Length: 364
Ligand SMILES: Nc1ncnc2c1ncn2[C@@H]1O[C@H](COP(=O)(O)OP(=O)(O)O)[C@@H](O)[C@H]1O
Ligand SMILES: [Mg+2]
Image (cartoon, rainbow, N blue to C red; front, top):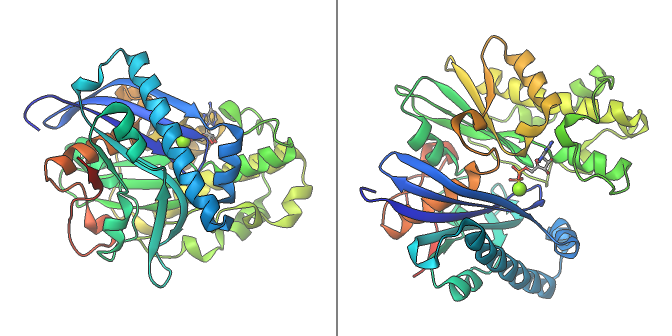
């Protein structure tokens, strides 16, 4: 991209907290975030999304359209907030909401919804959506796709790990002289979110700042037991989701612990899975860890990571001028821009795909 181009990205991850939007200006190997915002899902949409794979065909079809309309409405609002006119934007990239991710099923499959035609209709801007299937049909896991972005913009320096902590955790290890490695590390905020929603009967949807678990006791036995799950031994490329890391993953006896102990244990466990995965599968000596995703705001989680990885510095991506939840939508904006220019937006060695392709389906 020689000339400056504006692109919008929409990301709605496994947390089902809402849709995050970013608008960025891209030029060569640089980008600038112009505006970012997360729009929470209305409760009825959120409830439907969480039912996900248990919905009937007609319910999924309606949800696809409801979500698509919601995405388009928020995008219009977002551009108004940003004071940017539709005509200046080259493309919108929309990840969609994952309803089911089954890369290891027969046949391998993945399903993201949120009808992109609404975006086109409301803004007149070209839209690229549905990025994951193109990787799956080439034999990949359909994830993590963010690796292309991480390598493109952060790969020119020392060996670094870019750790995203959304609902699920994923890492990309990049650096000037290394070939990128990426995989899902396991749970991100999802276990903490489930537990806190359950024990507060929905009053809290997440542990803001990580305050809830401060002073809680960590149950070592539960940590060891949860770490025994085969996912943590499986070699990359690998990806995961709510299919494994849901309420039933949490040992039943932990639910009887004090609320702050339960959350403290799940928070430490989440940090531990990240550390354990690097020890098992990352052969490079990493110089720094850059954390993005909503988990970067959980200071208890961040402190565990700092202690586990010490002396390697662990820093939020905000030190690079990016809001922690803006990286993923910025990446889908970039992938969309690459797609409409006929350029690959894919790092197949990190997903297990046979070749690099142009991911996404274009509404011109
Ligand atoms: N201020 C905060 N303090 C602690 N956790 C937070 C905060 N803000 C967001 N989170 C966590 O981040 C999650 C959303 O992260 P996000 O990166 O959007 O994930 P996803 O891509 O799965 O939607 C929330 O569900 C919550 O667990
Ligand atoms: Mg989110």
